Length: 261
Image 1 (tube, one colour):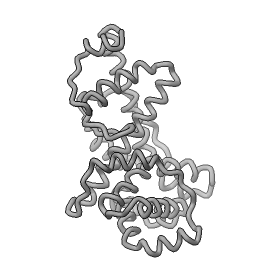
Image 2 (cartoon, rainbow, N blue to C red; image 1 turned 90 degrees about the horizontal axis):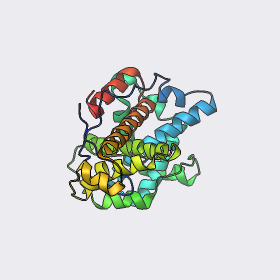
Image 3 (cartoon, rainbow, N blue to C red; image 1 turned 60 degrees about the horizontal axis):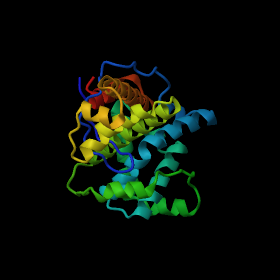
Image 4 (spheres, rainbow, N blue to C red; image 1 turned 180 degrees about the vertical axis):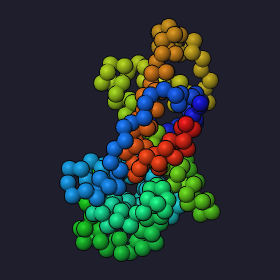
């Protein structure tokens, strides 16, 4: 089974041209849902769950506000901050009913509602009622946005889903990079990045033989490197999905939609 995906490192990358095997790597273990954990009375449990939510959705929320609602950077930052403050304070998530739709759609509707009532949100921010959220690198995000055309006619779900998908793979790839660095497998990640990310973005068509010459390794090693990092990226995709879905059924739906398995 093959997967083609968008990802971002320091800029928006083109569609990955090779496959990540859907049959390799185990699913992460079932655990308490993000929503239930954020509602927990244990502050440590809440913080871990909230951090997972913020890591996965800060960029999609911010970019959605910029693209769909045509907010300038400062307004989008303020509204994104307020969005996560409400999530952390349980105000927003108390309204979520898992039987009425997927969590991601619920979050997008909450963003729409917040944008429609931005005056109230702005007043709350001025009163200091928001929890501090460390944002992503806004320079990087604005560089990504500069190559996109936000359309008022585009379906809101499509805009939010696209940015969520980019953030999902960006997070998974970043985790795989750190993992490879820690394990002394930087060359493996470099080969993956060169072949699956940079070459497609630059319009190149590389062969394994060319990669072998470029990195000074046998062709068989190129194959092994790519297979290893793709497995790790897929593992981290599954982990992020597990972190940000509310139950096993929703997790399974998201996995089928993203990975086709």
